[in-house]
Image (cartoon, rainbow, N blue to C red; front, side, top):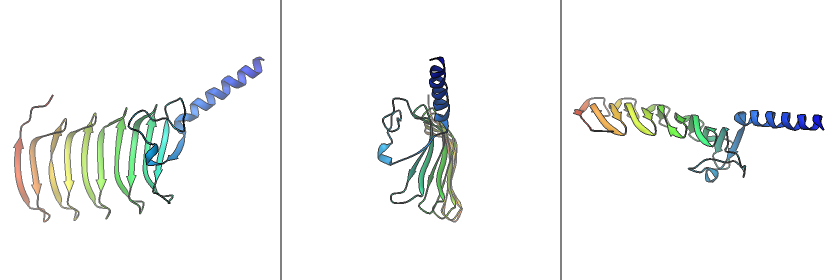
Length: 166
């Protein structure tokens, strides 16, 4: 009886410790805005989740979950496999540096988030690689010096913005 109990406990420990390393593939309709549970489980999902393009084995989105919330790196891809967007979540909220690229492979933007709000340096680029806009956000509000550029790279506007935020 003690051996059986030991096997059950060991199996549970091994099963629980491997949850964080799980990788699953789902459809976009299976993803919810709430806590994510996989395949009817009573436990929130922890691990890597992948969504594929329809009728393809090409990844569309790869994201990391911890206890049912987005937590860690996220990447989205174009159908050709090139990265479209990459960023990071902390406890279900966008956080840190996020980058995006045009389908041509040229960088489209680099922005920073804090608790799901644009917060920090913001830089966007024209598809030809020239600077498009540059400035700073504080909790989703433009703040400080902002510059906007033509496709040729020439400055259009330069403005200092002061904003109230909480």
